[in-house]
Amino acid sequence: MTPTPKPAGTRRRVRVAPPEKPVDCQACAGELPATALVTAQLQGLALGIDNECDFLRAVADSVTELFYVWSVGGLLLMANRGWELATGIPRGSSLGKSCSAIFPTQMAKRFLEVNRLVIERGQPVREEEFVDLPDGRVLYLTLKFPIRDKSGRIVAVGGISLSKRA
Image (cartoon, rainbow, N blue to C red; front, side, top):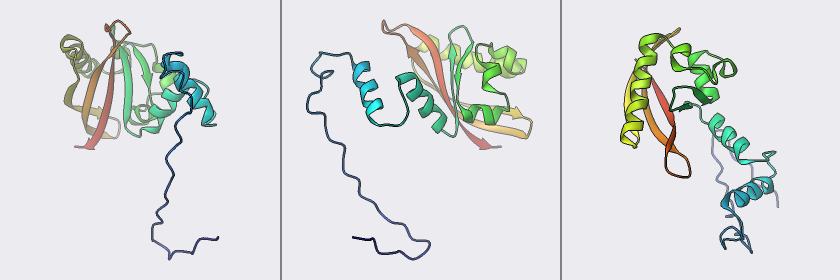
């Protein structure tokens, strides 16, 4: 059966069948750790993603706004393409560097103050931040959140910043 052509400028709704549930879910039965299930599911998607780290990187790079992770010591651990495009700073040369080595002193100081607040409270913090970039001042609506290890200790601060030109 061939689909009927639609006039230009109209949308076509496509129904997608929900994915089938695995017949034998070993992770749900407690036989495998959850990470083994996730990795197997990712491999089953045939997306060319072999592990959770690659999957997380692909998700982060799919977000068009800024997404980043700072260590509790203030080192940049992860940044997406949105961060790289907005700041004009290559990720490769920024990862592992301190906030003050990447940004001007006052800007770095403010970013680190919010990170410390997240660590002290142990809760997400919403903040409005003005950032002066080469192409003008930008207002960012930022959500920063604690990232915890298996024992519950905060090991990093993640953030997502949505831009709104000031």
